[in-house]
Image (tube, rainbow, N blue to C red; front, side, top):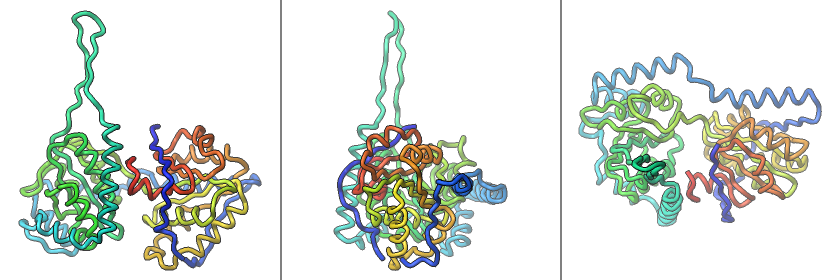
Length: 394
């Protein structure tokens, strides 16, 4: 499984603030055999978050897709009023360039420069990742090869809701531009640009002018089949909630998709060299993504295990998403005290986490044992947030 590697030593402390929890983050020890059962139960709960979408949800999403295919813009307008409580006319489905620019002007200079740095880094990384056409002549008169052509139209979904991230724009638009996609359009729920001007700023910085104020499953249906206003695309990329995921699954085949994105997660492998406040901050940063996010610490140090649990309580009563991260940690969070780093690696490989952080005295040695991880972050000053926003790997 291919993994992205992150190893810069930039200190990121934006999510290190003060939280008082009604319950402690559970420490799961596996010293006794009966505790292994407890660990297995928790790991199974985490894996079960990715189980196939339930029938009722799929049926609801299928009905939305049928309506959009049949009624086009009228269906988009009805669903936007129903799900987003926003009344739009057909002429307002496409966001004007003026609206984009006005929203982007609300972003302060620090955020704007950070966005520009992120765009530069992501572009450099993906330039190296870009595939090239090639040809061989295995025998006289025989030519074989592979021609790499960019798709004509890509539709990029940018989520809104309680946590709209400008990084969703950067991580989807930049690779499409590097690949040479000729027409890039974006859909996002109608309140996103007003509530999060950084999303608008990212779009403006990337010269994206074709943006539609449509979210949810109806946006995916519009991109897949087209309406009077929204053009059909060849491929849809971008994260979203379970309705977006179900819609992408249902339209796959009619058009291409990137993947069915599951809930976000981080696993941290740490020994007694790690700082409890750093570990706790990174667990919280992941847990606040949503109620189904997972944040796990695997450590050989009982002192670190207890210190991290204490730090989780101390950090961030000021976090605006405290209620969400409390629920996600209670359901899918854990501090696991393991007998060895080998055991930690075995558990990490079993979980195959989206993000894996290493804070040990031998990060290279630990990484050599990892077979299953989406992105690996080396050292205490490379939190997952660096990869999510700035470093370049997608």
